[in-house]
Amino acid sequence: MAKKFKVTLRKSTIGQTQRQKDAVRCLGLKKIGQHVMIKDNPANRGQIFKVQHLLNVEVV
Image 1 (tube, rainbow, N blue to C red):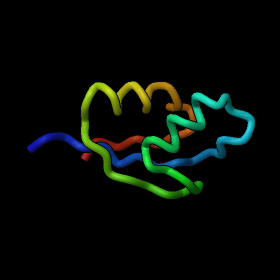
Image 2 (cartoon, helix red, strand yellow; image 1 turned 180 degrees about the vertical axis):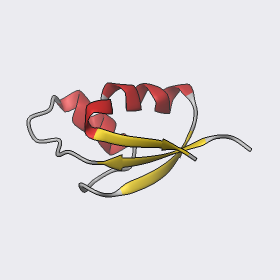
Image 3 (cartoon, rainbow, N blue to C red; image 1 turned 90 degrees about the vertical axis):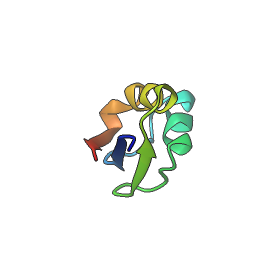
C-alpha cells in the first residue's frame, strides 16, 4: 500500500505569492483547518515543500 499524507492548512494564503496560492489550491485545500489525504508522489511532495510554512503534514 502506498504512503499517504494528511495535509492540513494552518495559515492563510493572504499575503503569499500567486504560485504559493496555486500550490495550496492544487493540493485541494480551501479553508484554514481543512485537511485532505493525498498520495505520496514527487509532484505532491514538491507542492508541499513549496508551502510547508502554511501546512501541517502527517504521514499516514
